Length: 118
Image (cartoon, rainbow, N blue to C red; front, side, top):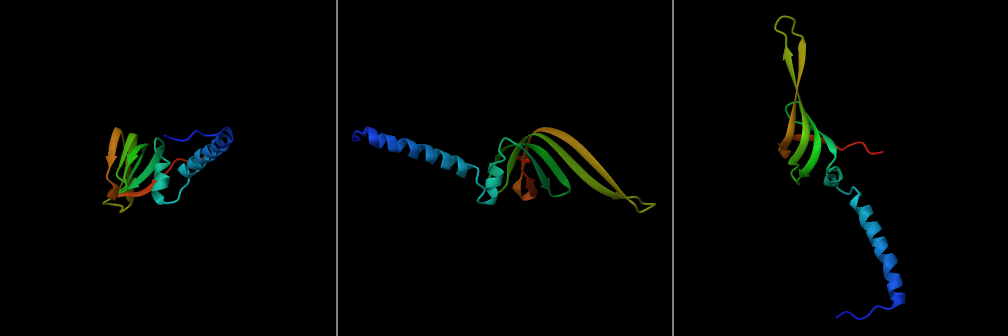
């Protein structure tokens, strides 16, 4: 059983609890290591660049320490470069597709850009 708390003691506990909540909120938005930036982007639209000239934009639903990700409402853009046989000019083609949910394997990820914050 806990001992009773005096009114003066209770008065001191309340501000400490508010400070600890404020400190927790501050720590929650602090970027101390790379994955913190990803954590702060949960439920936000992110840009992800992948190997093989692939780019995706979508809402980040989940991730892990390997950068495996689950994104929703995804727009995938695939860029291919072909060489014209006669002129030897580069022909750049982009293909886009929409995907409702997408699992991205972390070893294909080369860049993750969080949403712009103002």
